[in-house]
Amino acid sequence: MNCWRAGKEADSSSTACLPVRRLLAIAACGILASAAHAQAPIPIGPTRHYMHSLQTEPGTIGYQQHLRVPNAAGYFQPVELRGPEGCLVSLAGDGGFLPDHQRKFKAGLLMGPVYRFRIGNIPLLEGYEVFPTIEVINRLHPPPGMAAKFPIPVEVTREELEMAINGRLVTRVIYLEDPNAATPAPQGKEQPYFDIDRRLDPLQMADRMGRPMAILRMGSRVPLDDELQQPNPPAQVYPEEVDNKLDPPGSISVIDSSGIKTISGLSSEVHPAQTKRYPRLPNRYDMEEPIRPRSDTDASTKNLFQSRIPQPFPFRLR
Image (cartoon, rainbow, N blue to C red; front, top):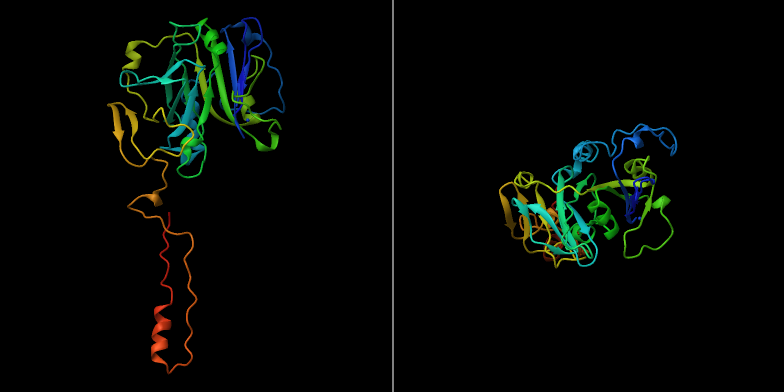
């Protein structure tokens, strides 16, 4: 995935970060100023009407996307929030925050709700905490049972955390790169991104480069205790030790308005045909060559022939 980032300085242009088929990210950062609205927009291509923009209220885009992605309703899209080395990452839930994970936090998020995270123990910035939010606006389609291996990566650098602590607003748009327009270069360990002018909309730029998947917003605001006591949207929290593996067959914590519950057994990514109620049927029926009788008068051979005829294969609509 690619990333865009905008506006490192107050008087400089904003930047945004995009993830590449690969997920890329576009990030925008800068101090909110009315002077930026007075500047003329920079043309970026043919005139096109966009319904959504980053000025839209958080959560609106994700819910409206259900009209375009109907199979995303009730689907927990795995998302992995990554911070710098040594930091602690947690997700809001149960009237506070869940236990911290080292550097990475992987959870299945619904498309539409806005999820709040906490990043603390930042290197060289000990004592400071940042509370970013993530809004999932689309979903991936991995093979059955392998969703945990292909999450949407949302990487936050130490530079962006420092800008947020200093009072700037950082916005990162993660998109799935168009394979026909992908950059022919290998992807390293860090999530690739590039900067854009702050007069541009990172969401529209991500739409031109591929398919926008998630939006991260991060600033210096600290959530109030009353806000943390509000009901939290549902989420599937993967164990910390699960990394680049198949969906775990063990328990997965599910956060809802009543707190944290544990669901034992198969995760939601397992195909329904693999459960006990719906046993997995073979893709092909093992056909045996029937023994043809030598004559119609040979009754024993005729009975053997009839017993070797394959039975009808049970078809079922899924």
